[in-house]
Length: 140
Image (cartoon, rainbow, N blue to C red; front, side, top):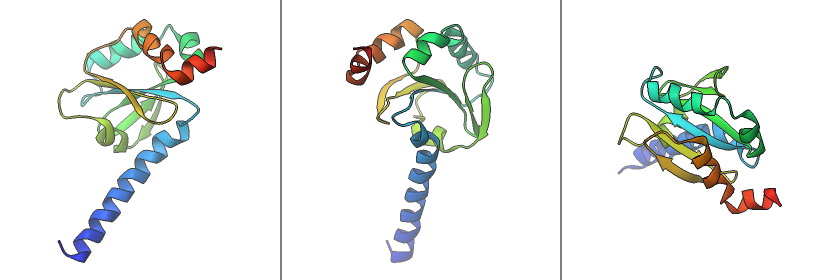
């Protein structure tokens, strides 16, 4: 690999990391983030998952949980009345190639805490969060 190819690769990797940091790093130490990802913005599983959390605003607030609906070309921050942002970085940084629908929980520290390819009940997600050391400290 010649030096110009290495340089371009380095620039690409840095820009990917920087772009991903822009979206999620502003949430680090402030929010846990549930990424609800799909190839299709009209995926019924995405709508179902958002609906499951739509009645749990207090529980989510208590756990500092933010929902991001993430698609290949944009993401929506929040649930039903979401704010739309144009960006593909989060999708391509976190989405695996296994299934169309995927959930990823990002902790307060910015690390991935859970990944699954099926719906999760809010109570089950809260149990996962409540078992985390930082959350147990918050509950004291």
